[in-house]
Amino acid sequence: MDIASRIRKLGFRKWYERQLIECHLAFTTCFLAGITVAACLEALRGAERGWISATLVAAVLGAIALGLYSWRRYLTVLERAEVYGNRSNCPSCDAYGRFEVLATGQTAEGPYLDPPSEGLPYPWLRVRCRRCGTEWRIPD
Ligand SMILES: [Zn+2]
Image (cartoon, rainbow, N blue to C red; front, side, top):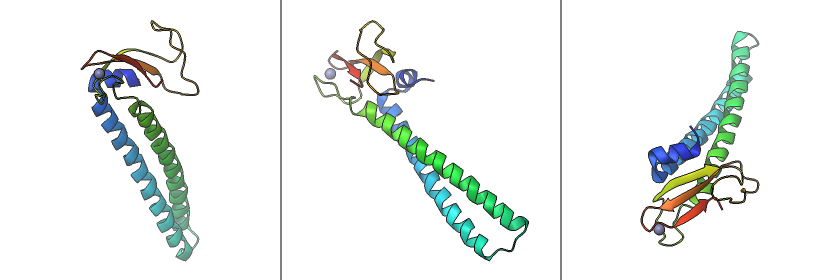
């Protein structure tokens, strides 16, 4: 499900909250993978060659891969949440996260002919404030 559909379904506040939970779960996974690497390396120092040391090496490699994936996921999800979170206040009445998504896209095409967001891998959202009716775009 894309970002606009998820925000429409959950509302911006819940979507943002879930993004933060997801990125911090990834951060915790990365931290635990680091501890696993350290523990396995420590155990590997005293282990004799054989299937136990091979298993420890495999666990280290797996934990490194998981840690790198989790770190990248943490940065990606956090950046995405901040990109949308930074523009989630209504420019007129300053209501936070109280908007409905009117349109979305990643190019200048569309009903509003907005210029594309430079360098952003995320779609723009045309939103309308539920309190005062002001429309704006996220990100700008
Ligand atoms: Zn407003």
